[in-house]
Amino acid sequence: MNTPITWHGIKLHHWSMLLALCLASIITACEKNQPQTIAIQQGSKTFINATVLSGTVSDKNGTVKTGSVDLNDAQNHLLVSAALDNGHYRLEVPENTALPVVLSVSTGTGALLSVVVDPSINQYDINSLTTAIAKKAQALGGYSRANMVVAAESMINAPDANKTSTGFRGDPTTQYGGWH
Image (cartoon, rainbow, N blue to C red; front, side, top):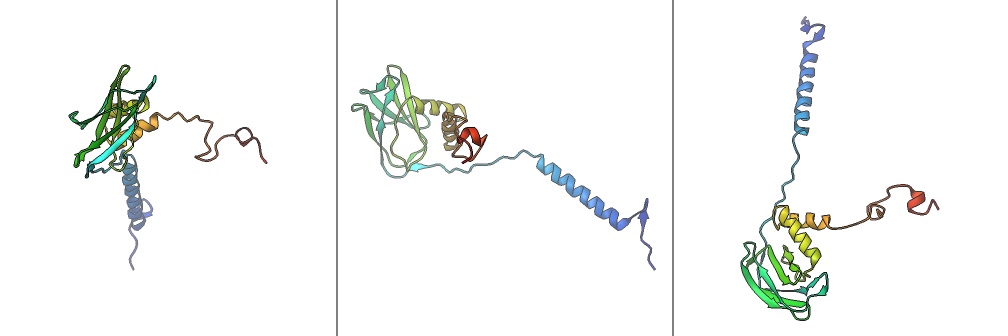
């Protein structure tokens, strides 16, 4: 009859299972300590066809009535320019224009910007908020769609007390007027 092999009173079969569990937990712990990164795959987008962009231009003083809107590519080369007509612009982007492109206006109070990162949208207002978003995206590493989203989200000023769109938080007796 075979007698089980033991080491310090533990059967070898149990010892190998214990060793396997220890190794598995070490590997799992090492994997959990690896920094999690999410790669955003984004192909380059273009205006395949000639596309008309339009919108309004305003600064801190109100509507910018005169001047011109320039459309520049990512390397800051002028693609097309259009005159303002009482605060409105309308320009045609040439076909096969790669995105992002930047709409810019020089005003008496400084340059205003708006960045185009999506070829399916053709209405772009240019104002101090779009300028702040563009500058923030540039500081984040460039005019990518991901940077533009992060920049835009950072410009939103939603009060903490208004959490109704994300679910209940806080004391129901103060936030919703008490239990009914």
